[in-house]
Picture 1 (cartoon, helix red, strand yellow):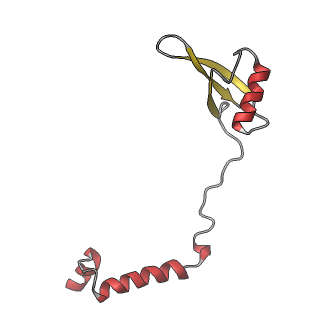
Picture 2: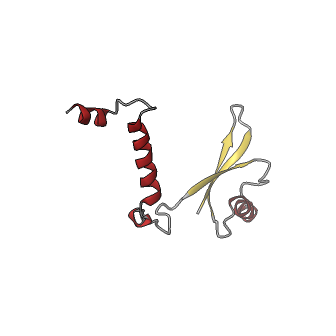
Picture 3: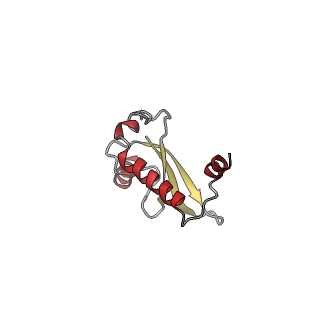
Length: 109
């Protein structure tokens, strides 16, 4: 009973043969476990986002000249996000505490 208690609670010192045996067993498990035991357990990723607005990008005021210029804004967003099919959604102005425009939050689809 004492040996079972020691195994479960692991009261052995680091420089004992029991410790060395545990390390050897761990290494055997790591290197000899078949890869097939760990494949197929990943969740399937969905190809499309389920929400209509998958991302919001913050763009500084110096990047965008005019908030209403959607074609210029679209080209800037495509360059920043790296998505050539990105479409501009809602554009919200971000103000600092003094009321100056510091940038825009742009929803991209």
